[in-house]
Each structure stands twice: as structure tokens, then as C-alpha cells.
Image (cartoon, rainbow, N blue to C red; front, side):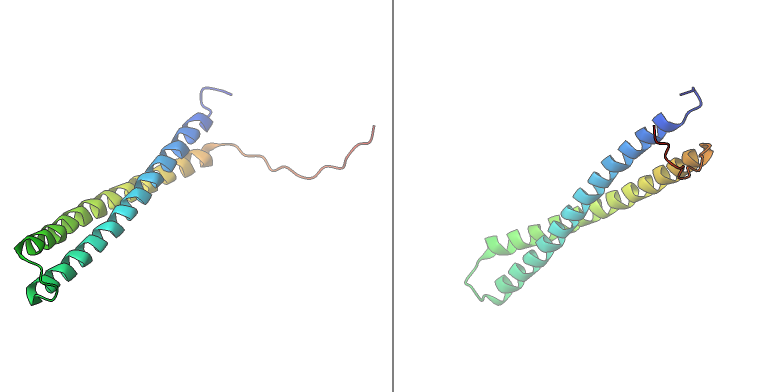
Length: 115
């Protein structure tokens, strides 16, 4: 291997892509949880407003907090997911460029020699 051999950098980029993919997956899970929190908080707020289950002011404040917290979490994780996806795309483009600089050889099937 020479100093100009990009295989180490390609390996580092692939490791970075894997770490970024884990971050993106975590963001997707938080986005789902945020949507569930928004929906649950909204449903609880409606139940409280209509007085269906005899819930009080504490439930109303809790449901509002749940909705607002879900909205904040949703926005934050969507933003992080977009940034992570952009970083993954940039890393994949860099990896493809490095792979393009490697002088690849075509390997053909050679007949076997019996000894």
C-alpha cells in the first residue's frame, strides 16, 4: 500500500456512514414517539375539554405540555435527521469519488492447473 492509497480513508468514511445511519435511525424513533405524544396529548385534551372522564385542570395542563413537548421534539429531530441525511450523502459522494480514483483490475476466470 502506498501513501496515495485511499483504502484507509474509504474505510474511515464507511465507519462514519454507519455511525450517521445509527443517528438517523434514532431520530426516526424519536420522531415517531413525538407524533404519538402529540396525538395522545391532543386526545387527552379533548377528553378533558368535554369532561368525558371527569378529569380536571391538571390533566388539561399535562395534555397541553405533552402536545407542546411533542412538537418541540418533533421539530428538533426532523432538523437533526435532515442534517444527518445530508452528511450521509456527502460522505457517500466522497467515498464514491475515492473509489473512482482506485485503479481497479478486471479479474477473469482462469483455467485451473492440476499439479
